Structure formats: structure tokens, C-alpha cells
Amino acid sequence: MKPIVVSSEGPLSQAASAARRVGKKVGFVPTMGALHAGHVSLIEAARAANGFVVVSIFVNPTQFGPNEDFICYPRPLERDLDLCDGVDLVFTPDAATMYPPGFQTLIQVKDLSNILEGASRPGHFQGVATVVLKLFNLVHPNRAYFGQKDAQQVRVIQQMVRDLNVPVEIVVCPTVREPDGLALSSRNQYLDADQRRKATALNQALEKAEEMIREGERNAAVIERAMADHIAATPGAVLDYAVSVDRETLKSASPFRGAVLLALAVKFGATRLIDNRIVEC
Amino acid sequence: MKPIVVSSEGPLSQAASAARRVGKKVGFVPTMGALHAGHVSLIEAARAANGFVVVSIFVNPTQFGPNEDFICYPRPLERDLDLCDGVDLVFTPDAATMYPPGFQTLIQVKDLSNILEGASRPGHFQGVATVVLKLFNLVHPNRAYFGQKDAQQVRVIQQMVRDLNVPVEIVVCPTVREPDGLALSSRNQYLDADQRRKATALNQALEKAEEMIREGERNAAVIERAMADHIAATPGAVLDYAVSVDRETLKSASPFRGAVLLALAVKFGATRLIDNRIVEC
Image 1: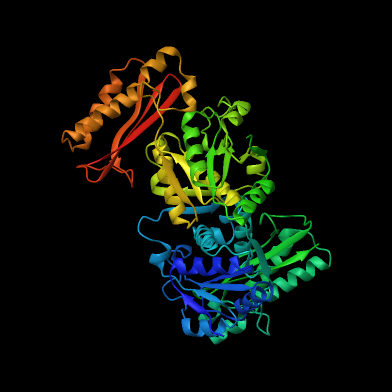
Image 2: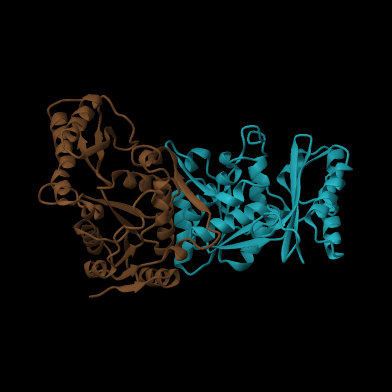
């Protein structure tokens, strides 16, 4: 069944509230399009748990830095809609709908937004938090679905929802990977064949770090050094960061206790990839 | 009928959503307590238009500057509850409920927040916008009521609601005044007898400016000068600002067109008073 596609706010809110009125739970998957199996897993999770499923497709300009890939970010709308099988409604606003003249309100999740991705991409999480809150206010979902692949985004959204008392349950779904371990990302298509082969280095570095922790290593610097060394040994890969941090605060956690987030960002040419895994210890 | 008083978030949200489920509209009046006839007029407006009325009483620390009157701000809870006649539910959270450990999310309505009151009170409107959005998310009112006395606060809230797609109608009620024209404010009680008499200078300056506009004056500088002169001629009154600005943007509007906001802030000793009026021209 093909979803209904709407690009303005009124019909979106009306359809979602009509579903709620007849007792359906509303599941929401916010995306920037260029959907892949990771997004499909979010849609399937939403479909399984809710009577009405909304997907938004919006390449949000405010979460891109001035030198980032906003212009060339892929926008394969027809293909995306084919992947929205079982979705009830797809929301495809344009930027003028989301940010009309005079728009000036921003959400800042302070401590979580300026480190890691936020340090490399100033303003990124401000853009993410603001657009997600707008979408939540339009859809009023009971549950919203995000991928663990964007671990820091998940924490920012969780914290915003908690701090602002937004009545929505945030559901985090596991990272979906290629057979060779590369985490799915809309940006993987930027990689040439050689970069694509080498991009498995991210997952390998995480695997190695997890193994070290399983074997008893508890010193963050040692773990981080091992991940950095693995990336350094990959020709063409340039490390942005490799960290082992507290899962909640995303701050340095050494010696480890509880759940540790291993996270790294690596550039191959102009393409910046991220990956992470959570290790309980 | 005495209202129910709750201080935690769960019972508040549950009571408001129970009212919505039986088809009642929810009217909400957020306050810092120290209620006066201005607040009562908001409550009456909410009562007249909605089946369920919620008042919040919370002296919000994040909207006070470090040298402001947070500590000594009046908190006459019993008297406030007596004035909540006809209110269904009063929400009286403490600061730890509103800002639990780890709280870190802020709303900024950028252009409107740094001028006038925002210039004199850095961070004030960030605190206001954030707490009001939290309260909206807890109460989910159909309508929320604010006094025109705090003209800039009204604009900040309106803009936040528009920008973030918050599904609430903002109702603005006229400023309530003492017989001699002084706008009601919880801070008026800080004035000594002499200051109280002289505090009518704010309303008089606004009256004079309105008269000049009615008589054809369209030069903002001339109008602002007249207001400033009137305050300067009042012994013990120290002008913070006296402006004639566009009602929407709160930016300089000369020559006037459409609706002009005349606004001023004046200190009497440590007490800072504000007042305004809107003139259509």
C-alpha cells in the first residue's frame, strides 16, 4: 500500500490526530530521506508497535554546516517512497514550510551538543533538536524511532524530551550493517570503491576496542589509542575522534563503569563517517 | 470551589488529559504567584472559554538574573490559592521538579530576546521561553493566557509557539491598572509610599506619547524623547528605556506604520517597573 504524501503542516497534523482519535498509537520516523535498510528497520519497528505510522523526509538545512554537503545530499524521493511500504503518511515539507520568514527559535541541549560530533559540526545538534521538536509538535507521536548509529543524536533527543517534558517515547533501534560490518549511512554512497573497502576500518576498530574491554582493559586512553592506531593504519583514513565515554553524559569515563560508548568519526577524502557501539562492563 | 493543588508532573498531566478526554477545552494561566487583579483577569478569561482551567505558580529561577529579586520575590501561596476561585487545578512545582539534575535544554527566541527587557536582563527570555514550553508540554492547553503588561514576553511566546508548531492558542488580555493608572505588578509592593505615587509617571508618559501620535507625530525619536523627558522630570525615577517600536519585531519603526508598541522601563530605587501600550496609526 502506497502512503499518503503531504507537504504542508495542516494535513499532517489532521491525519495524525484523526488516527489518535480512533484510538491508534502514532509511530514516527523522522528522516532526511535517502532511505536505506537502517531506515527500513525503524519503519518496521514503528509498524509493528503502532496503528498509524508517519515518516518525514526533510533534508534539514539548519543541521548542516556552511562547508558541509547540504547541496549534494542525495534526495531520491521516488525511491524513498517505494521504501515506505506500510507507512500511512509521508511528510515532505520544503524549507520555507519549516522555516518561514521571521523564524528565529532554537533549541540547545547544552552539555551534550558541543562535544564529539558537535565539536566538529558547530550548530549541528541545535538544528537537529529544533527540527525534531517541530516535527514532534506537528505529529504528536506516541513513539519516535531513531537509529543507534547516530548515538549522540539519540542522547540529544532523549535529553531534550526529558528536559522539555515532551510526551513521546524515544525508541532506539540497532545499527544495521553491510555484510562486511560497515554501518549503513546515506553518505556511504559518496565513497569510491577503494574507500568503501577501507571504510570497514571503523567497525573493526570498534570490535577491537570491545574485545580489549571484554578482556579486562579499563583505561580509556589505552582503548582510544587502540582505535586511533587502527584507523591510522588504514591508508586514506583520517581520524576525527575515537573515544570511550559514559553512555549518558558522553564525557570521559576512565576507569570504565557501567555502559561505555565507543564512538569514532573518520574521514575518507571529503566523506565523513561515524560509527559506535555500546559495551556493558 | 477550591482548586486541586498538585506539585508533581504526573498528576498534572493526567488531570489535564482526563479533562480533554471528556471533551473539555483546557485553559492555562502560567504565573509566578503573588497574584493580583491582572492575574485574576486572565483566570476569568480562561474560565469563560474553557471547561478545565489550570494555573501554575512557579517562581522560575532561570528567568532571574544573578542580581535580581529571585530570593525576595513574594510567595504568598495561601493568598494566591484564595484568588484561584473557579480554577480546577493549581500546579505548584518546586525547582527540582522542573530542573532535575542533568537538565540542560534551553529555548532561544533569538531576535526578540536580546533587545529591550532582554538587553537589561540577559537570559531572562530564554528562561521564560523554556519554562513556558515545559509547562505547555505538561498541560497541553488549548489556550494559554498572558497579560499585555509583559508585551515582550507575549511576543517571545507567540514567536516560539509559531516557530516550534506548538498547538496552543495564545490569548493576550489587557493590562489591568490601579485607579491612578499604574499597571498592576507583583513588584509594585516593593515601592515605598513616595515611589508608589511617582510610579504613575510610566502610564502618564505612555498617555502623552499616544496623544502625540494621535495628533500626527510620526517620528519615533520625538516620541521617545517626550517619554524620556517625562520620566526625567519625575524625582527618583531612573529611565532604563523608552521606545516606540514595531509591534511584531520590537525593532525601531520610524516613521510609524500600522501598530506601534510604546514601551518603557523605569527604576525607582531597586525596583524596576515596566509598562506599555499599543497605538494603531
